Length: 90
Length: 195
Image (cartoon, rainbow over all chains, first blue to last red; front, side, top):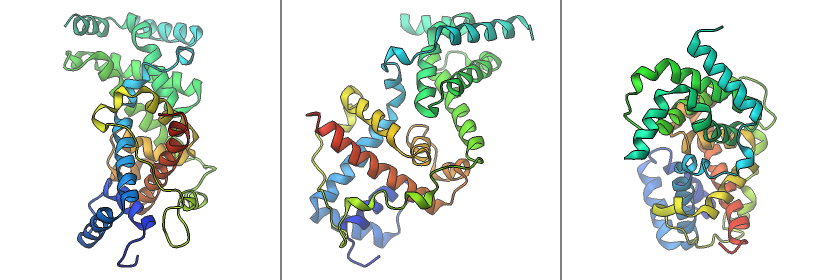
């Protein structure tokens, strides 16, 4: 990586900074680039929005289309499975 | 308060679990593993583990939250086992996924747009979440697994590496490519829908 980071380099560093602590010089050069480049700053906002949305994925699960729920057969199989375990039937 | 009481009552009565939580758990599992029969097996394993651990539950969290936490462990176990099998989209073949976003000198080909989302209230933006789900479904399998283990299951990158049997460098590359793909897909599908 050149000492002046390109937008491509910075987009990689933004992502890496979400998964590990970057070395000091990379952190400084990334921040300098972000101050000067609004498109990379937007990329960072977008990565953060994607992270925030992903954290709520399970809340969203209950709103998914009903057609993707368990089939009636599947429900019966699970009920039978639970009943067998509760009564100790193999 | 009533909802909490009724949730605790449901957890105390496993015979109600399928009706109360079955669809929710199944949908979550299906969004992660794609195969309906595997998703059903994961729900069954979740119920079995919950039956065995029921005495330790003691209503410290909502029943739904407790069951989804168990399901997440089951999904991670499933991925850990599956990852030992041959995969069609190895890391090497994913190398050019994000390259089209930049020109030869590393500048943006298509400049990122300003998104009208508030990260603090993103759970209220159903359309954004809908598109994110669609985009996740389009990601290559290995990238989607790395991304979901990290961002949905909250695993550290070290844990993601262990589950997927990859190096730390590979995990950073995969997570970068997943985020870039999702970013591009959201710009295409969400912004074009008029956000």
